Length: 497
Image (cartoon, rainbow, N blue to C red; front, side, top):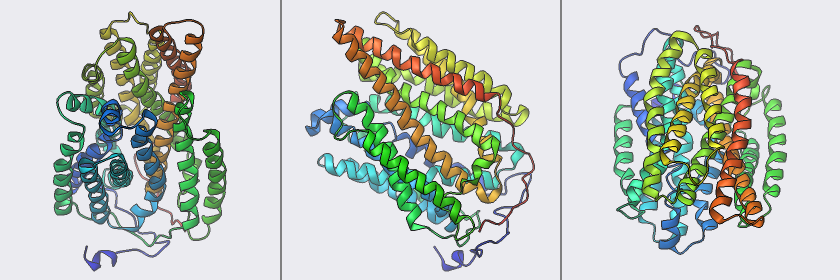
């Protein structure tokens, strides 16, 4: 990057707008958003691509399931550590430079993973991948909120919902198709040229459409957030392993450390508001629309990620289907979500969130309660229909919730709001996975002790897991009635010190 890019930095406390309000995108801005969307889809896809590949990796690399799970847990941990810092990164540096570093890290990690001779280097590749992935979504969110006029944000946020929800949803399908005829390395070899192409296009086409400013990085806050969010993600991920007897440490220890570190972190953020500036500006939670929408998002992501873990277990263990069949059966739900998300975005622009979010919450809740009826004799077609209903409901929720939460903030809080939404999304995914897996494991163990067969015991565990998902969905349904549309005209920008 040239030095005159940094010369455009505003002093701390500048009241210059990130981008003036306008009626439509300027030439080149649509290209920037398009490149960011494609790049984000590619990187987010890798978040869940390893689940179906675990049995193959255990065989090829000679590792246990508990060790292999670190390929996903390590990815999530890295995301949890890096995302809280993205608010500072997006504020401080030019857009093209951030994109180049993020996509460069992802491409490097993909190359390392593809050529890894063993588990250790494969894990390093996954961690480097996650470092780039963590930056990409807040970067995309902030850019869209900066460039797209409020009256037409729903359409673009619908495309972001495709990235955030569909990419992880079809990850198992993609890996299942690849593993059906190729080695696990091809999961990375196929992605690598796409990532490099996106990197090249981004360096060529992406322009600095945001206005960086001199922001202070509080190292103490960064360390506290790493320990806090990392401890919670690790602890929650370990709960499922603990239920199966594989956790290396008692899960409550990292969870307790994480909670304590976060308590200190939150206190420090409020103390820094009148000083050098917080790492995460928690004043966003003073906005009711942001808070309510974020809580509903958390419950929705808990249901999504819990289902992504438990439903394949039911299909493969209880219905005795292969990894390819399992991936293909989950594909219609992901496809429906991808088709509906842009449509829902346009409906949001026309009608606002409530006519979309509440019916979506009803569909999600209904699907989760229907999943509590699964048994060894359930037809695979019924599973596909219920999963598609669940995906349809989530499609009607994600776009309005993302747009209502972040669109209700002042412009200077966009980076902080995007970082917070990204962080709680990771926490929700880990919590949903931990809850569903723990309930499944403990219920299955109880059923086995009572004399049930292994197949019936697993089915009992699956039903119990979805029962808890159904209960949580009722919270999202109730709160969906409180979601409000953000103002169509952005409020005045106020300086953040």
